[in-house]
Length: 315
Length: 289
Figure 1 (cartoon, chains in turn cyan, brown):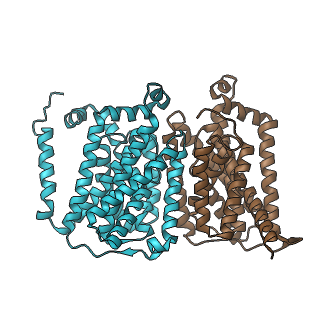
Figure 2 (cartoon, rainbow over the protein chains, first blue to last red; figure 1 turned 30 degrees about the vertical axis):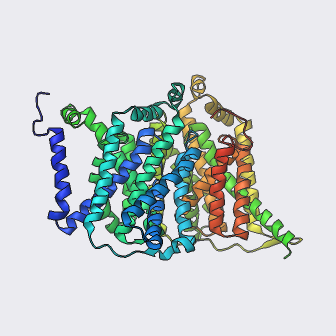
Figure 3 (tube, one colour; figure 1 turned 60 degrees about the horizontal axis):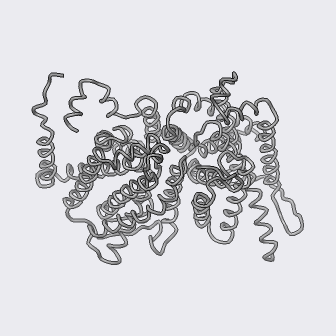
């Protein structure tokens, strides 16, 4: 590897990209801004799934349940308490995080498939509850909020969330905390015998994930100015965030970003045009990833010598 | 109807439902026992069994042929799923098999939605009911219950008394040693997955005979089945039946005296409670987690 990436001075490149993204709402068309905005939401959700499932190996099939809790809390805070939407999203995020603590303590205390199935059940249960608990959620009719005038604020909210999650993951990659999460993934009993309180770390990762999902849910509600059971608990998004993270490579810094960028807009297109068949495609893609490239695109890069330099430069 | 006979009636209905849940849950538990894999697509296997019988009977095929056909298809599907998907990741952490089976579930459910749409379907109700004192029980539910109990007994008999059962149990207890004794553990795994899938499929056919269902039925079923297996204890077949009884009773009672949504809440609460109180199951021995 003689090639030096002088153009790719990592920090410089990073700053340039950041500047472009910050300036984007002022220079680009509304269409492009909403396009990138949605992408940021996908990136944020992929990272939040990555925290719990990518790093600890505990697969969550219902992380979107926490997105839904954030959505409804935010909508209710805006409507009944007239909170500013950023505060309302933050409050939704906190509620979602608080909710995750007892839930995580119950389901993550044990090994085995309990967590996966429990999250799947929670997701369905909450969606059903939202449809039937009319006094709070207004049932299937949903809650309407005042429409949004400026998309730029939403853009910055999602951009900020995605950036923060990226930076947290970046920190995880080089911290003892991240190392401990990985140890739990590799060998939980071994980790415990080394004195690592596995439950604490798992629940912590779960709560961080819940906080970010909840915040994303809150911002999303404000953005579409409407919430009903199917927008708060979107089953398709639940699957998409998992596959995005896996495609990029779970438990890696760049994986969720790559996966979300690759799949994010494709999924939107397919969803509109092939409502049922494309989920079959997703199933096949998921099986393909697990069987042939379980560590995703990042894992594939790591095996190829050519790109190893790029990855090292970026990390 | 006086309150006492109402409660008695609900109890009987709960018992009949428990019989049906029991078979599918035993299938799930058997697969978990042998493969250490949580079949998250179990509910969708049920759906497939149900809708195969539905399609056949709309073409005038009798149930007596339809159910064995569904069982056969599910067996083949189960064996193929194990051979070509689960077997490849059997030595990997559980996350891999969970995600793979999730993929299977996605494909099956959405294929089901494409073929049969999301409308609720049911077979023509089979008339006839028995009256015992104040109770009235539809005959077909009784027949289904008896078949369910018989199937469970046959499964327990096969597991405990026959050579095949011995081989399966050996593979559960110590796969490596079983392999060293000349047991083809891979074959046992495929066979078990096939048998488990049959049990799911047959339960599905019972479901469409008694209730109306749509291709998304796997969604709500899988949590109930796991709640049953977890309440009963993973790998414990008698416990599974006890678990089915707990879940079915809870569901029927809240369904009668409150709402269906409330019964979902109760099932989920039982699931969480059993994780807190007795992760080893109600009949299980105290074991390390």
